Length: 149
Ligand SMILES: CC(C)(COP(=O)(O)OP(=O)(O)OC[C@H]1O[C@@H](n2cnc3c(N)ncnc32)[C@H](O)[C@@H]1OP(=O)(O)O)[C@@H](O)C(=O)NCCC(=O)NCCS
Image (cartoon, rainbow, N blue to C red):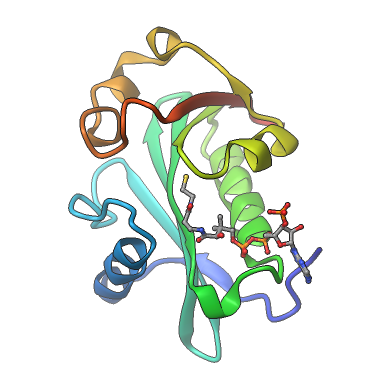
């Protein structure tokens, strides 16, 4: 389902307080979310209001999708799907070949999107050494990979 009020683009520096609030409201970690270094963030807006966000950590030809959240008032309208597609497109444009996620909540959805379960040991070290793999996501989270289409 395509979200009709589409306004998805890079997060501006001033978006990050609202992004962190959104992530925390979804019980997702936000302490290291600032859009600098390896992080790229996309946001979905409707009438100027932050509807959702997704983060991409860039590590050479590997990327980590993270911090995927849609505010409850905007859910089940395809905002999440549009953010996911935009992030995959961003990854493709950056030359990323493999995308990884850690998730406790959207494994079934990720399977439908083309991710498959992988062993944590198979994840590139640059991603494994990051905050998501070191305390910000529980050890029980599914670890998944998708070849960028
Ligand atoms: C996961 C999350 C980002 C999805 O956001 P979303 O905008 O609701 O996603 P979508 O609208 O694309 O899809 C959600 C569901 O709505 C359905 N849907 C999409 N558009 C729809 C529409 N117009 N009408 C009815 N249903 C619709 C989808 O089929 C999907 O159903 P499914 O999950 O049973 O397959 C959101 O639920 C969220 O923020 N959850 C909490 C944070 C979280 O767990 N993040 C993931 C961390 S790894």
